Image (tube, rainbow, N blue to C red; front, side, top):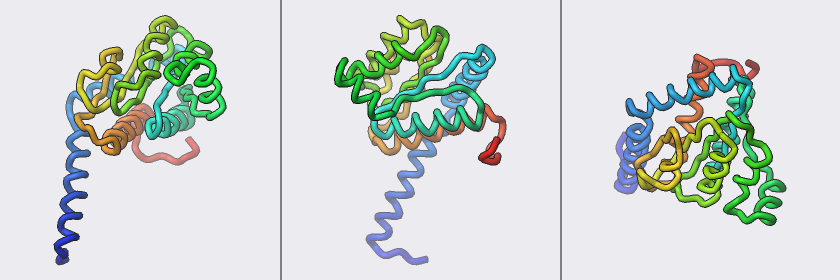
Length: 196
């Protein structure tokens, strides 16, 4: 196949984009952390505790996808709060920077696990959620971030997965792949029917 000059530029862009993703996804350090998180989540299931997961924007969509698949396919209780009425109610009454901490105040139980997804790791609502989680005696705070390595959210977390990028879409793609890999790891296989 012969590529035209403009197509060569596009081809290189896409090739480099995918190369970056492969580099972010596949590291020994990340694999060890995903296995560690799997063990924690399996322990949660045995103890009849739950996972709470939050994100903003695209990360909220990721949290919803993860929550539904973990609950339905892996049979582990996982909740997220992306209902517009809850977010706008809590944001209106307590401020957007406090809506997650208020949701935790109402729904978190001691021993639960909290997963926070933030590309920048600087979202105030996530940082305030960490403070509330510590008061609520959340068992572990797991963070998925990008941008700066020692961002404020990763400093607050117990287990942190970080993407060495400032590209929001690449960070979010990587977070989604890690989280869905975690579900398949818990289930123990990559291929299964949707009616597990």
